[in-house]
Length: 300
Image (cartoon, rainbow, N blue to C red; front, side):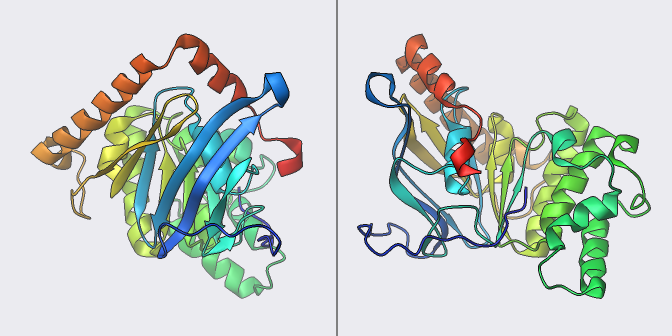
């Protein structure tokens, strides 16, 4: 998904919340999200504090049903928080802001089946005041960046799953976002394609100099890709651990995963997730999962 025109809140009567990370490009401050009301109210997220810096790669992990998707939707302006706030470049977010692009897991639903690859990629550029030549240049650059040269005139159904996800990534890149948000983007492809897309994402992060926020269930993927791994857990969920990977900017699917530091970080995160999962009752997990529902109509 590519956001429409910026709709950052300009309300002045709401109390200001002091930022905990002045240099953040995207930040959650005391973020709380609940569904329902009264006796039926379920709090999914409670007092979440989170920040993404310029050109940083951060992965969010947690056990299944802990509220990762709800957190992502709040961070991107697709859901309104019950308490606290989200800021993009210091401004309160009330809907997806310009400068932020989202890549979802289900690539088959995010692409328009009747449009060619290049026309799907060019969708977010329409109505942005960009000349046709400028649009064509951005599309061509994005196509080349994701390795789809020669497939521009094909329809989505003519491509493999991995290639369709490359189209979705290229569409986000054509928008030239300062923040790229990815929700389980590689979960629906095979292991080899997943590794290729992970490495592609790292390359694109360097080429486009963008910040990346990726939500995943896969701890190995999180450690391999990120500068920091943020673990959320509990019911309601909050940030329970932040781990610096300290693996450098150059990563390799074999060599990096053989490093002692990779194994150490992976073990610490898995231990944290397991311990938090054991502390959370099945009823609490179910309550969180039931609250992690499709986007509220009012937030679309």
